[in-house]
Length: 120
Image 1: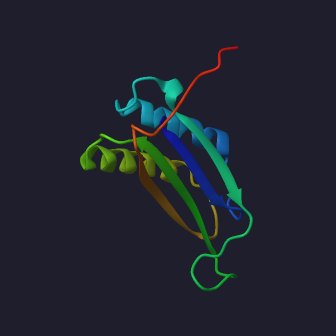
Image 2: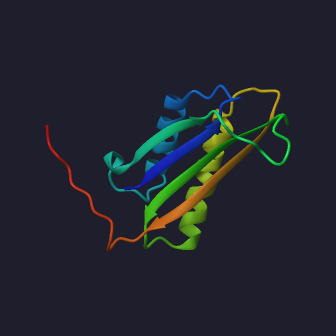
């Protein structure tokens, strides 16, 4: 915990690994995650998408969902959201499209979240 899910439209040439590494680093450096190995991130390109009503519109997006365990204040969640939005802004590829960047903070209940580590 936490988990970062990044989805982006396939009309963007996103370099997923550098973006994920930057998001992980930013979240860890925020001071709100005690162990960097707890951060798990992944990216998925979305080949089928429509922004708005015109499927031929010159639009694109990158949307990051960040799942955090409950217990962080709204202020901390806002700080994390803004910090990760800044990372997205730094990694958006040059394009001829309008690009919507979004960060969504989701809370996962501590009492129902389960995790184990299987050692190699």
